[in-house]
Image 1 (tube, one colour):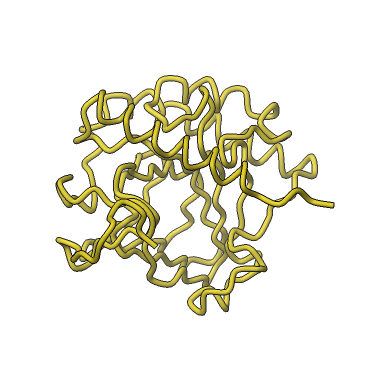
Image 2 (cartoon, one colour; image 1 turned 90 degrees about the vertical axis):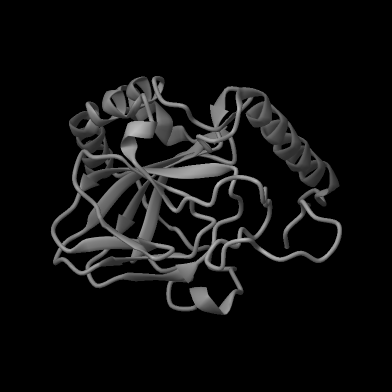
Length: 234
């Protein structure tokens, strides 16, 4: 449920419907040219290093996890609920570092040049996403339009694509792809082996520095409120 409006409202763009936070005055842009990200080249230069660290981590026994939580109740996730066809390897999740992060020094060093959404200096989310052959991620909306999602494609075996709004894109290894996931989007791996991308979030390019600070302050306080009202585990 959108939490930025106190009364009923209408989305300005038909295929842009963030589920949590909506800033209606931001330009409704589905896909951003990589040229708008001045740090794109520095991150792209680390493609091989990130891929090597990912492969080595798996070789040493790092375990992927289903991206869609088994407890998820939304009907659209029925096929992928707890399913390893779409899986992830998180270095940071909910602004908390995972034990795996220490195995990715070159990846993290390269990402220091990127504008990443952070809380207390830690990325809100940073992970490797694996899509197995024949897998389809169904159409869905992300939570907020104040951030954009960044993909660094590491392994693209062939026919792997994503639709964002009315636009289609085919991932290319080593070329950043940036989009607003508050637009309806879906993805496919129609190749015969795994597709792997590194994913993180960046502030929306059309927000000013002050606006970014205000938005992230509000999100951080919301997170603090949620943590404080949670019932402690017995």
